[in-house]
Image (cartoon, rainbow over all chains, first blue to last red; front, side, top):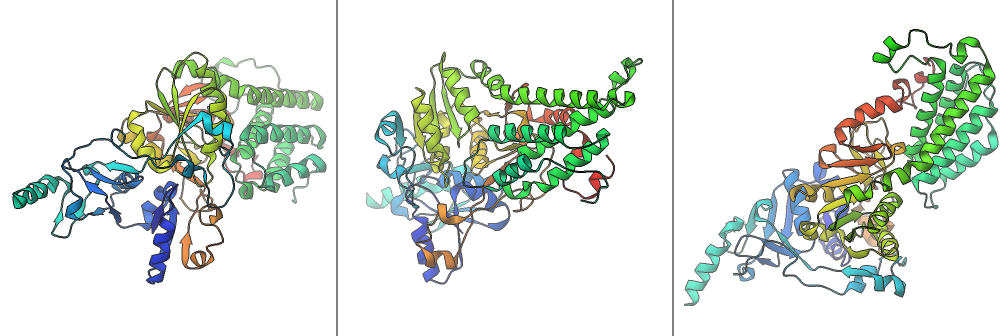
Length: 168
Length: 354
């Protein structure tokens, strides 16, 4: 089951690649995650863009929400992350340090119907915020799978220290 | 329809209403549907032939079964039918239903119009009751928005989906308070875009975010104010898809969730199953994946449920037209607004024992 979110809608590509590999696929929007999580899902697999030294997982926006829903329904959350993505930075929320993508992307719809905000005067009045990343607290993640081992989130500084010692 | 009574309901307004409900291309706020329902029911009471209130109860129940309620998924129509039935039942037997202390105080109750047998007086009383209901419906939004200043301060408020009640609530609060509004897109219908536009046009400092960013943004939000499609009998919500995840994120950060809804949205039903027929409605996937991606549609199961069930313990407060309530109090309001015999409008047997 692929959970997708706007405005990127990269889940559609994921679905296409999975169907090419003959894996039976379902597709939902992130708003319906609570609807499917209860009965239809057994585990949640997420990818990370970074793993911070305090255990927070930096992923694409929506990762934290999905981890929270899975945690609520007691489904294991598995994060896949290579060790080169581990970072010494620490962060507790997703706002103080993040990236903003093009706000105009939020106005495009796949069906082609225009958003009510497409007109210029409307756009000037409303602030469009298109966040790219999302910080997931370590309490919501069950396990992190790296190329060297399967670790809990709290082991991130241990790996960083080991790599630091190797370089010295 | 073999009831043995002369059930001639006024065909024209009844049929127009029927087709109106079936038409799904119109975007219909609940308030408009409610006012139309009340008008049609009043027409029914006035023009159909009945001799005793129990006949009228049967007529109303038959009419409710004739309407496409399951198709249109508008629970407000059944709620209004139940309110009118309660008005008629109160004319039938004024002391029944309000059991308790009132029984002790009504020693010399004036003879009800049923006992005196005056049919015109009976009709007038029922119509007066329906008119009172009409006035209550008209004033429901104003009663809610007047409470805005008690609940909004200088802070950041998050809202979800498009609700006229919530929009006017926030605009009323904006007159004296200086707050910032964050609106979630509420995909795939993108109702949040319309909400953001109208709030910004009303002068609010509005920010639009994607639904996936709700968890990220929620820790700077002070409260969440949302509307709903239906309030269930246990204080739970049947709201737009995506409200449950928002409420879960709010609980994680201890942000209060406030729901603004009029009492015609309160339905005396409980959740028995999350399935399509029982609770939810799964609508077409073209909003998410356009039909151009035909090969995707044929090999991938795309789900697009319309509603979300939000349990009552995730909601902090309900602001209704009769004031603010905790979710735990709704069982009492249900017993005051509706008669227990009208809870189930669908079953065949329910119109035998009026």
